Structure formats: structure tokens, C-alpha cells
Amino acid sequence: MELQTPTTIEDIKGILNYGYYQSRQEAFGDSKAQQIIIGPAAYMQAPDDYNPERPVVGQLLFHNDIASAQGQELDPDLDTLELLITLPFEVPEKKQRELFQVMNIFNNLVPLGAFTINTQGRVYYRYKWQIYQREVSGLALLEILSQAYFFVDRLGYKFEALASGKQSLIELMNEKIELLPVSLDAETAK
Image (cartoon, rainbow, N blue to C red):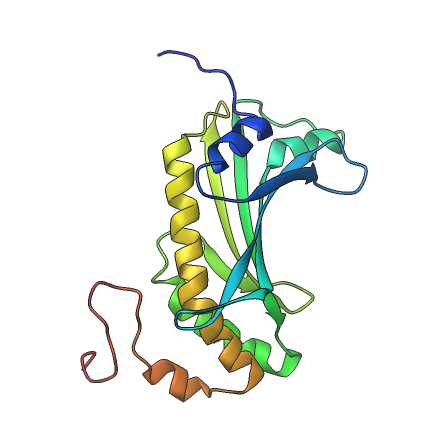
């Protein structure tokens, strides 16, 4: 087995030059841990209606970098590269339970990662990639990002419509699901 040099944040930044605007910054305040900020990218607020005034922002960071910056030691051969993509809206507390139910349904269709709501009521997509000896395939990373942003585009505005009250849970669940090569709706699901 050929040993490779461990992937660094700078390596990730170089990989992302193939199609993603990004910058590097400290992960937490004065921490030595670095993260990559992806975007901002225009938010798809309706089918094929992108709004650059409402950005979607992604973050990539290595868990071991965070732990090391906090004085913790972890297994150097195992690490997690985490992707977080934050959507540009908040969910009122009274709508969070309903949205969690919808997210759980859609998360079963998403092949990588999942959508959730943070403690501030913001919707985000999260994917944790377990890596060995910090070897990150550039092609795999680009594919993961492509899929993640595809699902953010296809589901984000649906989640927002429910959270804002523009659409009811019943209306949302009866809509066609445009996530598969063949659309599914209430009629074809019978």
C-alpha cells in the first residue's frame, strides 16, 4: 500500500478551485484550526429561481484540527471531514416539529448526509465523511459537494415554504418529488 501525504486544508482549497468559490478562515475565533468557507452561492427560492441576495454558505473542516486546537488528542489515522451547508432562513419554533417530520421523510431519499435544524432555528445540511490517514479523494469530494448542493437546491425552498406557512404539510407531501429520474406524486405512489 502506497502512503500518501495527509490532505491539508490548503489541499482541499486547491480541489475546490474546480468549480467552487471558497476562502479559508479560522474555524472558531482565535483557534489554530482552519476551515474552508464555500460560497456564498445563490439560494434557489423556487424551481430555477436563484436569489443571490439570499446566500447559501458551506463549511468544510477536519474534526481532528478542531480537537487539536482545543488541546485534545485523537487517533491520527482516523479523522472526519465535515460539510455543513446553511440555508438562508429561520424556522419559527411553532413550525419546527412539522418541518422535522418532513425532513425525516426526505432524509431517507438523500443518499449522503441529512437536513436538520440547529438550536437557532436555521436549517442546514450536514455530511460527515470518515477518512483514514487523512487521504481525501478530490473527485469524491467534488461529487459529494455536487450531490449536497443538488439536494439543498431541490429541498431547501420546500422546507422554507412549510416553515413560512406558504404551504401546508399536506400540500408539500402531495407535491411531485423531483429528486429521482422518475417523478413520484400521490397518484403514482398508489
